[in-house]
Length: 327
Ligand code: SF4
Image (tube, rainbow, N blue to C red; front, side, top):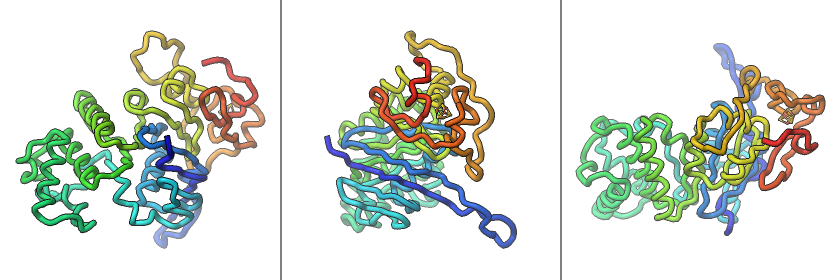
């Protein structure tokens, strides 16, 4: 299998401004030296608490933010670099589904026109062929042809997310970023949308990055999982490996707090100490050390590098030193 998307040492900093004059008073490092590879046809789940940098990373991948440092390669070609946003030639091949599709739909436009917008922007087809493409894509996402002439307020949350998926897929992308696409939906509708995405992925041979704070959802849809904490990647593993043998203390804490139906799963809930630190003033050394019950002196001063442990990649001094008890 070949890599479709590769991120190399991606960093994203934002200026933090304050006061009437909006003076820059600091930098927030939202993403810190994140590297990852997603092979064609696979889905990477990206998990972590809100504020961990996963949505910023998604926006970098679709070209909404240029990275401050690092490189993005797509199908072997560099398409973005330090302060250089994604080459527009590639934007059609990488699309995104947002958590709230309603906010991206123009309330005055019939949804058929909203779905066709990407085709118009990229100068694809004429009025007749675009209409046909809209009706085909509506059928693909399970909506009737009459939906094309209705307005956004006439649809339920689940139907709107189907519209969001149709808008992303009309350009026939190869790579789809799903940014919390089900977290605003009722549980029963969540399952329908997840199953639809899984079906479409197989049918259209998509490669995906799926962002969620819900580990059960990620387990259902992802092949591999990357766990992020305070802008850092802390563990990357195939989905079964991560759920059966979590290695990083933060992954263990997240898993212990997630209700997952699995008779083989034992163990008590691991409580995280304290709050998520401010990214404006991150801890020294391992960013997780103030909340980690395994932290020792080295953790306070030295940022752990990613190492290979079994089938996973983990950034933790205690894992490297063999000091952690088995999960
Ligand atoms: Fe905990 Fe230290 Fe590992 Fe960080 S490096 S997760 S503080 S044991």
